[in-house]
Image 1 (cartoon, protein in one colour):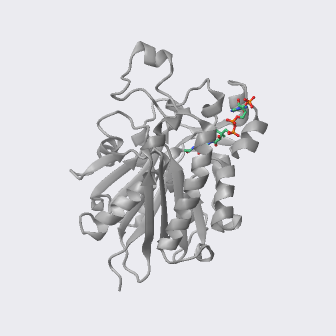
Image 2: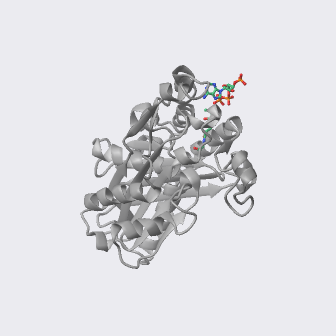
Image 3: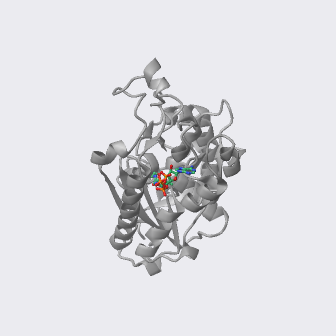
Length: 329
Ligand code: UT7
């Protein structure tokens, strides 16, 4: 029996109630449902309620994932929250989640790898579980992008949504089950192409930084697009190769959902049919680190991902960061 792999034991997700459609955006900025749909594939996105914080959403998703994993809440011994929109600069959203879940003094922290954050978190959890450092790790991805977008910039504001997804990871107890390959990378040289410039030590909050809207998403869309296509393809193909598989072996592919055209270019190059690709960008838009764990939970709950299936996930995001993982469910 193989005991040294890590499995996805349970998943959960949470989308806030409020739905913001493309037509809603068209009332606020010079855009249209037609432009957003054809250029991105997005039709609507969820936005958090006033007063709702990132850790509130993580807590809901986490409760669902813990129940799904059929473990006790106290069995969780590490919390990793991937986010670029935490409740506070510190304490981390991981710390707030720990408090809200009522968990003991277990380690909890945030991981900043933007859209690749969830996959980065899974890779870290996998290594800690395989070395015996942790038993049941809660890895979440959660964002309230509606609080960090520039509501007047049509080129970026329409792209993002809010939500949280979580997974419980622990040791696989069946032959062949678990994480088969991981691939990750980053290129800080291209960091300026997708950036929230202010709020950190480089440009601390000031009247000027607020007036210039430097606390919001700044993106060179075309440049990011080109890199996203290349790196999403690379991450998907490498993860499949490292698992000693071919694209025919993949039962379901969950890509990061930044733009339908990036997803289409990736599956074409990687040789994955559209029917085997989870596409939910029309309903949720780009929720950065939360996108993949939400898709993962939806796929399992919709019966698109069953025990024994081979799952591929790949992502690309600010940093730049990217990652690819193959898992036998
Ligand atoms: O999740 C992390 C990674 N993020 C990504 O991967 C996002 C990558 N980038 C993209 O998905 C695309 O570049 C965008 C969707 C952001 C933009 O699509 P595009 O086809 O690259 O459009 P563009 O930026 O080249 O703009 C084309 C035109 C411009 O007008 P002109 O200059 O041709 O007259 C824009 O001003 O579309 C205009 N435009 C819009 N028009 C209506 C830009 N945004 C909008 C809008 N509504 N919301």
